Length: 546
Image (cartoon, rainbow, N blue to C red):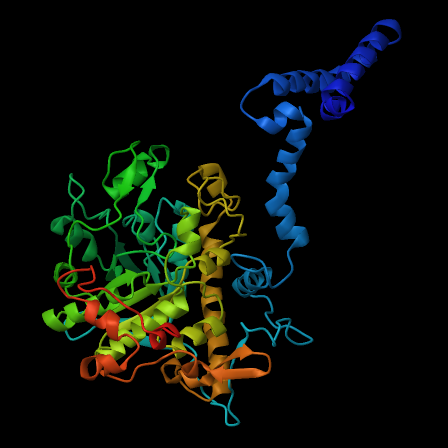
């Protein structure tokens, strides 16, 4: 009996106080009826909780269990604002978020009293500086994109906005990012959700991404439409196009925009029916083999008027990058760039298992693709792009030293226009108006203000990269090398990254594939299928490193 009383203590107290106030209101003063406004609803809620059948804990602890729910709802905010330290928060630490915010707002990004990082940690890495620093590092480096098969090459900044779709982002967020791209002279990837008027409003450079839904370039059956593609791809603002094979947030998984979010405006941009579920299939219908993929890329380049075309993917099964290389070699069709998206996830909401345990992390995937290109003698023709959790000059320098030609970032640019990592992107209740279609929430985001902050963040990040280049003793990021990057491998021991990871020499896969750690994967790869053509058996010497 005492246990039962304890579990029902809240509604019992509400009952006693209701009776007391009722008696006092009758006998003494009518003012005693006022507390009943609180006590009677609590009593009724307790009765409901006691007899409802949907929730075990509220049935056993009427009303009191709801207090647990209340604090459970507050838990993310309490952790972010009261519990989390500066460097261990996830997905981005407070220190990372604050660095972006400070740079975007033009405030100081210097720190006193030394590093807060654990320099003895196995995760710690640093660049080896030179006694003879470079006095004039390139402050705004760019890279020329376009093989001899592209008639309209593009000069890209080394730091750009990664793919985020209109629909996932609000109209004001797209406006702000594109304004930032124009002001900062870098490009803005549209994401796979189509090319909207908001992408075009400010005239910033665009990379138009085409996913398996072919939004903005599809016919009524959902298949690729050459005419619809050409209409948009030939716009002056579109500088390059990109085929999305997979993304780090949910590799190998399609997408679904619920009918409730498919407004008339989004339906018009995506060329789908309004107020119906909008499906992005897991795979493409325009091609089914590596050779067909290359032929599709060549077709896109032709339809766009000769603009560079790229391929974006999160590295998964290890034979697949080599299947792409074999298709390139067999068809002699050169994609102009390849974007490697990290399996750490990104702005796209995804099933937790896919975000946590599917897809290769960026740095490993980047080295695999770098080795595939270098090993096939293609790295000097095809640009390699790193897309992931990059928000600082160090993050850029790290990827550039390991083979990337430039970097893309999504969440970092979201932070620059006001994102606070509330992680409500999938609910439509973003407090900053960035990932919501609610016009009342969007009004908080002023594109003319936040766009300038995105541009300022871009400029300050490149400036921090230049500081690192100067210290290391190189003038351009292309001169960064793996041996300049040191990584701790245990207590009191650190090695250059090229003694931890394998970096193939040019044409190693063409001349002596069996001498590389990729031998079995290379032989399992075929230009005519994405499936392995033989069973892969990993030798112990292959397993130690990618």
